[in-house]
Length: 148
Image (cartoon, rainbow, N blue to C red; front, side, top):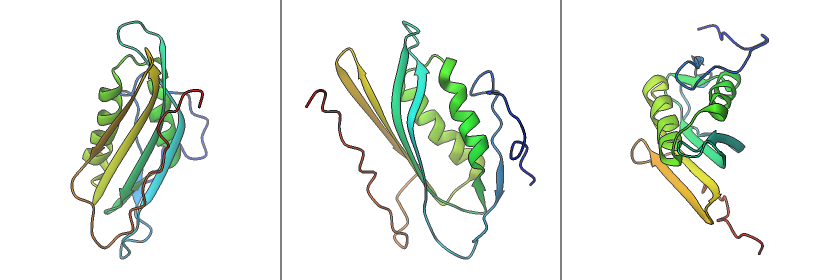
């Protein structure tokens, strides 16, 4: 499993479907631990108006046999920049794809979307119950407060 993108110049994929994710062997297969990716500047496009939408994503997972290589994840998430989809589709779709391909012990994603039409939308998905023997901290992304 040699990463395809690590150390290479890489353009953003044309779409999330066209993006390839790299997975490498878990360097600590005998240990149970959690990995967190915080993505404070995620963007996609509204499927109705094609206007930009912005979110703070938090992806937590407990690895199984593999881990996701972070550059390929960055390229995959960047491919949403010109992708038109509802918040729910983006958030849940990212979690489902990572779970299907990486097969972690457990994965959750929180999508904390900035207001559209004055209403912030938060989307949460997880692959199942979190393992009892792993420290799973709260995501601690504050709810949208507007101007205070």
